[in-house]
Image (cartoon, rainbow, N blue to C red; front, side, top):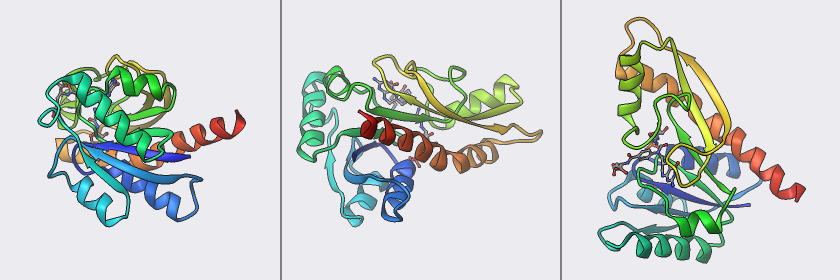
Length: 196
Ligand SMILES: Nc1nc2c(c(=O)[nH]1)N[C@@H](CN(C=O)c1ccc(C(=O)N[C@@H](CCC(=O)O)C(=O)O)cc1)CN2
Ligand SMILES: NCC(=O)N[C@@H]1O[C@H](COP(=O)([O-])[O-])[C@@H](O)[C@H]1O
């Protein structure tokens, strides 16, 4: 299994999976990281980690179909067969989704279907959870389809929302479970590859 990562900021899931690959805990090879943000810490980390990288965004490709095609070319050129959205804040297009159908996973910092969809990303999600009065939150790994956060859920991890929680305390508690949740979900994909 060759992993392609898409990240807009830190790329924490990409880092966790790459460490697992290099520790022999995941039978996969991290191949490429693509970011829409030229200053993303994820790009700098991926370069230092020896992954091939690409900065591909609407700035360079204003037409969504051109950006979709450019992302697909970069992924296939790197030989990626499985995609991991690691805090990627843009909508993935039909060319990439068509080529990698059933092979694209995303992590979202809530218990989908609650607090998902367009406009729901990063801190906004935790703020919505706190405003809702929910007594639990968590993270969800799902297969990616065209509709934002609508794809089938592969795995979820639950955490309590505690009295007095702030954005930062809740975010830290959710992010603490994200890495291993993504690892568990990608391992499941790995076995489905070898089984076929
Ligand atoms: N085709 C799909 N693309 C993406 C999905 C998906 O399910 N299908 N998931 C998202 C990840 N995500 C939630 O997990 C998410 C990312 C971004 C947004 C959003 O509203 N973005 C804003 C732009 C924000 C920015 O540029 O900083 C927007 O599109 O207006 C919602 C949910 C990744 N792609
Ligand atoms: N809707 C997608 C979304 O909100 N993803 C969330 O953004 C953060 C990215 O952190 P990172 O940039 O440090 O990896 C992560 O918590 C991830 O769950």
